[in-house]
Length: 327
Image (cartoon, rainbow, N blue to C red; front, side, top):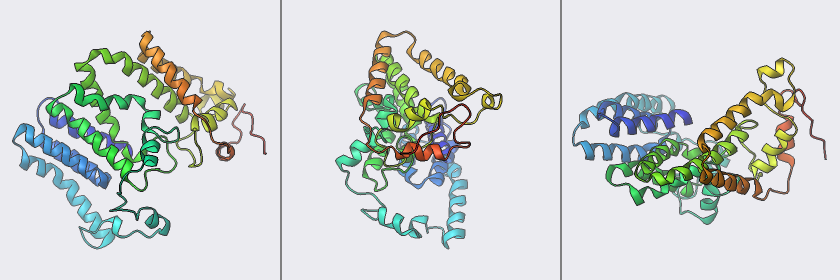
């Protein structure tokens, strides 16, 4: 669902502002985003308002494009909850979830430093820790004007949503999963930014390489981390890789042990990083500094998470890996 939401948001922007204006598809993809995830409604409203303000036409076709998904959503509400306007938020049954989302209006309340730090900078969740290149999108107002700022406006909405939502911690995840739609808009905003300020390109390369290294290594062993983990790279990713824990793959079936069985994956990861850096001294320095900071961030004192995750492995240990000893 997260992937569909990212694609629908990016597609809506491209249909509105890239090449010829396609109002039917703008409405279609905006409505699809809302159907997939209700909190995307304000972002869809930003896109629709900006598109209609820029082109001054196409309102009827936008509405026609949105109609199919509006009908699907209304039918779902009617079938599941008894009325088209009755949403899942009015039928929560899990007492713990009801308690967690209770503060404020539908879970939205004033931000705190814990939410800001945790959502944006912390090793366990922070957007700028795991995807530091997205921080460049914050510079968009410095160089971009008018409708080129639409992606930045969408990003601003999602950041505010993240730091004001009661469930900002997001569960077991790599990065803040409730704002994954930020990704296409950050990419568009940064691309427009580099077009106007090419001198930022080496910085983007370095930030992007650090992001690929962190998320690429994390994705090699885990799709999410227990909430008690402070620095997943040091507490989970590093230990699992050091012990040879990698997912099942074809080379394992051929008898290749441990990390060697995942060699094609790591070669592809290294190639992606090399393509980003392109022998740029500035990019290499930035990437090296950020990777150092990511891995130097202090870990927590507990070590139960990595043992728990290793115990879930099939098989445990994988061929050629060293099992974790009990303490």
